[in-house]
Length: 464
Image 1 (tube, rainbow, N blue to C red):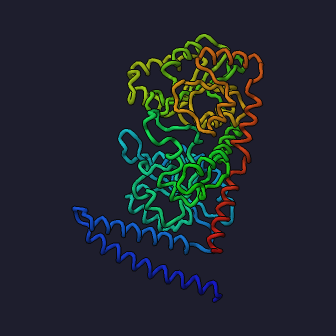
Image 2: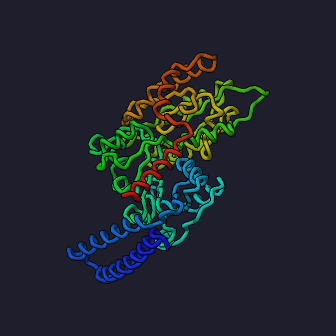
């Protein structure tokens, strides 16, 4: 037995003794936790939390030294898998990583009931991603997760409310928590009400989740600056690695461009994507313009047979229209959608990969947020409809608007589209090139940069 093997054996023995001791402590502590939670019992809870945190830190130091790096991807939102997919695939192809994908339920407004594990499972199965399923009691699932002893764990969102309590931030201290933002952080304020003290920066950089992360892999140098200025850890756990979602969108889009409207008479017509956002009120983000633009868009599609239109609404738009804001009845909305779908040059696309749609199109008209970045990476003209009431952009978002064609009305969007269709160049072409250099500095290399940062971080811990 080598000295190293002897040391590892002793560490394993120490860990076993510690775990037995802590288990006994937790059992004794829970015996005391009977209502009401007076000051003494609250102190006991705090001590229990401290024990769990300390045990987690020790477990992280002892796990899998010299073995492939075990990394769990906890998937409660399969529609955002494309953020993690390049990292998962890069790990799968690397000898020093062992990636494990796991599907679990999520909670969403308005009822906040945990569900959709089946949907997450079916989507990963469709994509051909091998995975485990946490379609069981959440505490049993947490026990199984701990048995896997991951060195790292990627969670998809910072919102503890959207994932089962067993996988809340404080329950994951036994591993190194990692995060890649599920969307390109572009807005300045998350709430429309100026009286709300915290803007978008704190919500996306300084929740308890962000503070607990071992590593956060951010999109651009602009985002690194935002983390450094707004996070309690001042960005020391943040790595600028680029945005792997961009790489996935381009890869899938260019591999199989698809336009859902069949060509007529063998003639390709000009292709427009219309992507309205769901924030149609003024109490939140305030970007959505559907209520002021849907009639004009329908009229345009009716009158312009030489242009094809694909409506790609935000997944929450219809629910906001008939539910949260009640700006239309369900009958009125159904009538409008039926009129749109009845047109020979119009289609509605509500789900599925949209990279192929972007690759097959000629221009996008949007009032949204994510698509301001995601569409521009395809190097096509983007028309941004400014609602005039949104919460504003941070530095990273302002860079996107600088290379978009900003309009106030559909009439303006239509006039510009007519010029582009006739062959006039995109007025923002050169500005877009500069923007792409800022938001996508390392095309197709973000995943490898993330893996390199993980290797470097773990080696520093081993050498400490």
